[in-house]
Image (tube, rainbow, N blue to C red):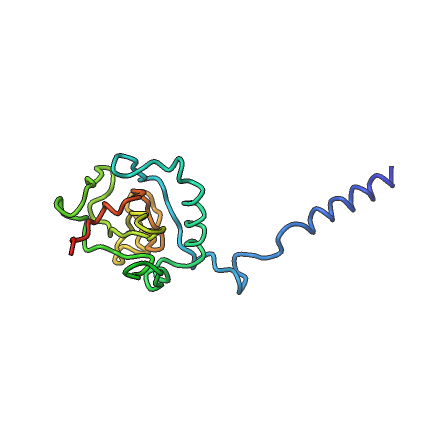
Length: 167
């Protein structure tokens, strides 16, 4: 019986040694700095597309973007034809003559719209809570608003959310 207990203790210790030894408070942990993505508001009505068939590439991009804060991506330039930033914010939802999209009724009106460049014409369009709401408590839920969460609304494969002027 004693032999089995020793073997059991060694197995338990071996298992415990495989568990992470870091904590949320470690100097090297950047969890609070990393942006978050929320897909609750995702809308697949045309011209947007459903995530199916685009999931793997999208997840890889979102994983990459999740390494840093939204403000980091707002300042990080991509290598495109016009080389803008990976994350750009819009002054509002585009006017009817500047978009092929309709404002989704399930998205709050007082949000800040933006987009991530995925590749080529492909964009991940969504919103963040406005700066002035950051860290404020929601009156009903008791949770705080977070300006470092990007709420995904459209997967725009053809750059039709904010139509560019033809020159």
